[in-house]
Length: 291
Ligand code: ATP
Image 1: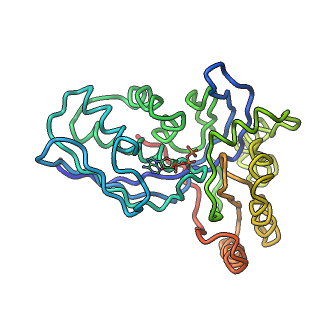
Image 2: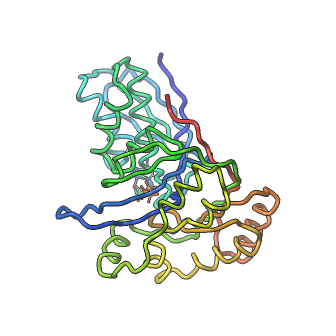
């Protein structure tokens, strides 16, 4: 196998709660993660010259060891003493620095791909153990689907699959640093915790409306305080018929859940028309786990 094409899928958080802060600065979280069918296309090719070369359509992304895809390849190639080179091409579509785990998902795809391409024989669990050293969301991105993530995000429990629905993604033209959002959260007192158990019950009952009604993200107020555009986008989604709308991760991406594709498209149109977001996508949830 000299060439492998992979999809690195993005995620949304149906729920995001923070339980506390650890000495090392990491936070204990309780999150319901959901994979969506919005993806970066990744090609891994064997190369004659040794080393890792990264190519991407986004000029502003690093192509050295600061790229998570590079670090994922480097980690396995060093451990297994792989002498050949690899060329990795990232055709990015998942909004960057947006709370959709784009970088983590790229790292997960590269771990999976290098393991297969060089027949390393690592199990999914073994890939996850290595993945967490690259980022807390990497193990989840290896697993995919509807999952409860605890610990720093690496303790994973598969949940009942999310009912089928349309997901409207809108990324306002601002970048948010996850680190800064968590630091601001630490200086606030968390007054209301989202109903994570309610989401889990809704999933068990296969009740999309209950899942939507229980959605909540404890980071939302922190980010909205600085960027009210997030609230504006949420309002349009709800007005246009979303079952609910919320910020994903530390933001600024907002997603809305719809049971009607036409309404999701209308909401996207309204958001673009008001120039609240340039990047909008109507997609769906993706429940298949990686084998
Ligand atoms: P999360 O949801 O895990 O917080 P995110 O959506 O906030 O992730 P990413 O898109 O992963 O953030 O990007 C965060 C930073 O990581 C960017 O500033 C970017 O420069 C860097 N980065 C490194 N490698 C990649 C990659 N392969 N794709 C996207 N960003 C990358």
